[in-house]
Length: 478
Image (tube, rainbow, N blue to C red; front, side):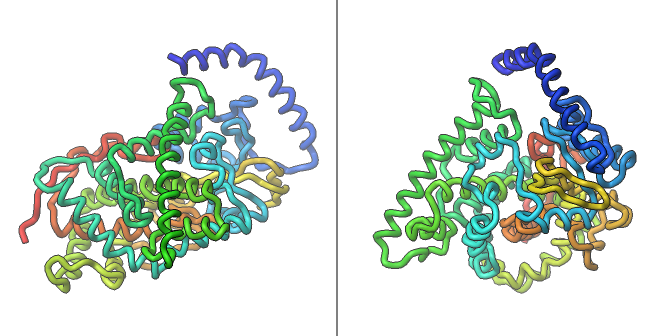
């Protein structure tokens, strides 16, 4: 109801807005003419541009087929458009990805919609540049480097086994995407941060996620309004946890003694290196970055295994081999993880075909000359996973599922499900552990099959199986 009122009010003012924006647009185009060789493309209507085509394709998870691919065929790998009110240059290909992502802070900077910034936090590493970004990422990285991950492996094993015992045991059917969401959420909070997950926390976080790409309009009933309310709830909870942790650590003679990421962040806060707001915002961002993309990657891995029984057979053989060298109840180690080479090939091939993100926006902080074109300062630049993942140049027969293609090296910046450069996903290795450990315990303990093999994937705002990927399970005999 309220959203309808806003909708019709805005459309009532649209002719005037269109006139003003058209005037500004024509002046800008005239000013640029003859001075800059812009990439080819169509800007669509002033203000709106091709936003509706972009969002409609995104909602159906058809961005490549309906938006990117037709324009690549028409204009080439680099083309211009207008999305969400901003003139945007879309670049495709490993060289373009490398050029763009490796020049973070020099030629481009992160550029997210205002709603995303408000909900994720202005003091998260998502919004930090240069030295401050490097410092905060360094603090987070201490828990996600090899030594930190090695300490996490037994905790992850215990979490996965507990999750299966409490959420899978005795059931015939379940939704694997929802199940892995619950699991990855608890892993981030309890194993990485050391914060106990309380009932309702996941639902509150998901209400925030629903508004990250919606118009930043604080009108009662709107998606952003509901998301902002949920963000306030989360912030109150985290402020309480952080302040209690600070008091506990200030009373203690040794800091960071539990090795948890929250302890490292709070230690930095005690030393005056990090503000309380930075701790809160980076915890919020980390939870979103780690749990949603991981659960989708796991779901798509199981989808591919169900459709390719030969691959499932090889994976099962790999994990039975690992299990045969363990005593009953013994946890996995990092050495066991290293042996899961084929499993990781399957997971990577699943993420290639079903990337957890479609790409990311940057903003040109200076005029950029690339491939004979000029990307003007202030324009948005969008790199895409599809530009390489679905490209015959980098992956032969790209729409086929072939895990063995990862046995040999893949071109740098061609496989980018978690980005690249200085802003490559900090939780990439944690996601890898999460996927491999979960696959190990499921394939060695359960038989399963998909109830809806042709279930479509949709986006809102991130990709997910539209039915939650229901499966039928039965325990394996020892």
